[in-house]
Image (cartoon, rainbow, N blue to C red):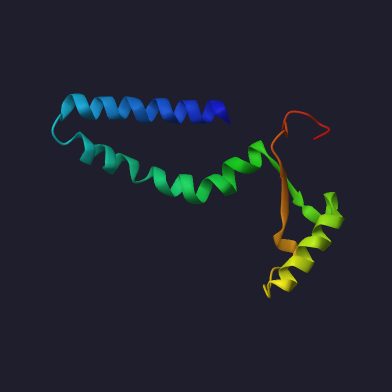
Length: 101
């Protein structure tokens, strides 16, 4: 994930420097225009495309049923309607290259 962030960040900085060099008075406007298509990726596609490649998501009830019950009691006390299926646990240490997960 750090490699992807470094590559994207480097590309954005190069675009910024090119815009500053070519248009010193309006570089901010051109950089804003270039950044517009990147925003949907960051906000909507990254959780659906990039995150599953780097993290393992599984239902919380599989890993910690006791915590699931406690969360269910807490949501009932708060008068919230959140189902158990909405609770997901993800592992930050997941290595997609390993077979054991």
